[in-house]
Amino acid sequence: MPTAGNSVLRLLPSIDELLRTPAMDALARQKGRAPVLDATREALQQLRTEIASGDVDQAQITARVDGLPLRVEQQLQRTIAHSLRPVINATGVILHTNLGRAPLSRAALEHLAEVSEGYSNLEFNLSTGERGKRDVHVNRLFAKLLNTAEREVSTIVVNNNAAAVLLALNSLAEDGEVLVSRGELVEIGGSFRIPDVMSKSGAVLREVGTTNRTRIGDYKAAISERTRLLLRVHRSNFQIVGFTEQPSLEELVALGRKHDIPVMEDLGSGEIFDLRSVGVRGEPMIADSLRAGVDVVTYSGDKLLGGPQAGIVSGNPALVAKVSGNPLFRALRVDKMFYAALEATLLAYLREDYDSIPALRMMRISEDALAQRAKQIAERLRASCPNLQVEVIESRSVLGGGAAPGSTLPTRVLGVKSEGLNADELCARLRRWETPIIARVEEERVLLDLRTVESARDEAIVLALESIWQ
Ligand SMILES: *Cc1c(COP(=O)(O)O)cnc(C)c1O
Image (cartoon, rainbow, N blue to C red; front, side, top):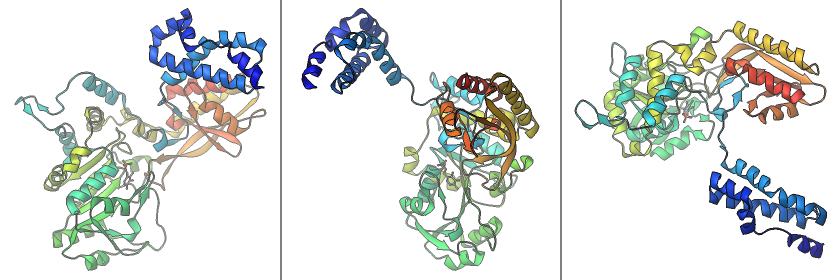
């Protein structure tokens, strides 16, 4: 009814009138005029829409107008709240790319805060008082962790491994050819595809061998005066099984040496701690590749290394210097926060304090410890929420982040089911909890894997499930 609507609309205060009320004035002083003005405009507009659609009649209008300051405040709370928030990862996927990959260690966070809240010697040599280089801070630690008796290794850091691969290819092979096995033309999530990265780097991809079998002879036959690099790419998120063949790193290195062509390996994950001790096989260790003679390796900082997002290039000092001398390096560099977090993470490796690095701690935690925690939570929930069915179930956790696709870790998960709510709805309510809890649904049950939940958060899981049920 346009006429009725219009007469009701006339009862609405103007923005100015509204902003002059004591409640709104106080809000503006507290939260700032501009956001309060925006929120007021939106709240008024919402009310106008409600009136126009006939939802509000003359009798209700006064109550709605009186409720406007509250609406403004709620609106404001939504707009000035953080959008990026912590969540509880109960998926059991340790390096969950959508949930931020590796959580940082306490030491990394403290060092990051200490270095970033003021000034630092990021690019300043304290002994000479002259300009320094930011890479010295982590290069010295990588040298200790990766140097083998036979060779010297230097390391630089960029924004992520995709950047490291792009930069290394551009620095070492622009306008030349790079030989890659057809079985290694991988796509990693988020549109990182070897052929695309190669073409953006200005190098020409020269495929050798077949999808399942590539021999050293295939590389040898493809070498020409245009060949600049032999590239090995780790198949981080898939496996080729059956009738397969791939030359060893040693064979590739020997071929490269013979023709004076460097060998580069994109390791993806960058393992420093030997995960075979927790039953994870198939992930190459950085030091093993360097020991085999690979000239340059690239890997991520926030996969198995358990540090901040970063792309790391380690290897032969002359080649690494070529990479850091590329003008693109300046465009891909990272800031002091990354160096601080990475430095603290590497120091934990040097101290062999592996459990201080959350991703490693989660991989190393025992099945018994997980079973114990799951049992305790299940018992509490059975006592407090009789309408919930809670079981402890044997399951497997995965590393995630494109690491060791074939390896899983034995775990115990909580399986939660109820009469009143279906599993998808229960999962959705857990996501709406004040610290959202991310779980998965399998066979009509919500599954919560405690491997990726800090034990201090077990209480939050109990409280969330209790509050949904009471
Ligand atoms: C993960 C991965 C990348 C990409 O690394 P980001 O750090 O995500 O950029 C590249 N290559 C391989 C083999 C990988 O596993």
